[in-house]
Image (cartoon, rainbow, N blue to C red; front, side, top):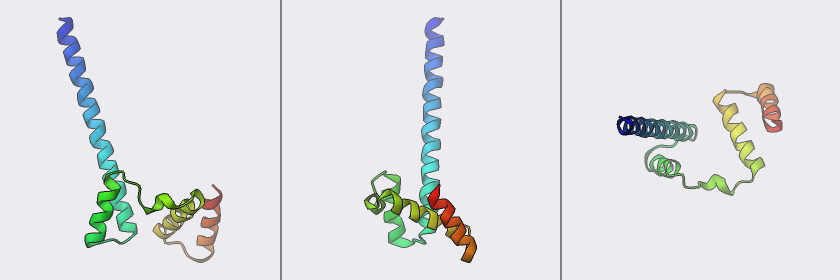
Length: 98
């Protein structure tokens, strides 16, 4: 009886780990797709980007220092929100400080 219970518990644990791995991969795919869309990539450039993004290989961004990465992310966020003029300037100031 104990062996059956242990076997069932082990099976549930493995199933749970599998589901978590699938969810992580789905999130990764979602993030990579969003980044490719932000960069308006298509064709071979998109395929290459997605391959690198999904394989966890460091991209060219890894050569940027932390302030440059922050600036790039804030610019992307401002673009996504379609901010312009004073609204963009205010957003960028706040984003770069935080």
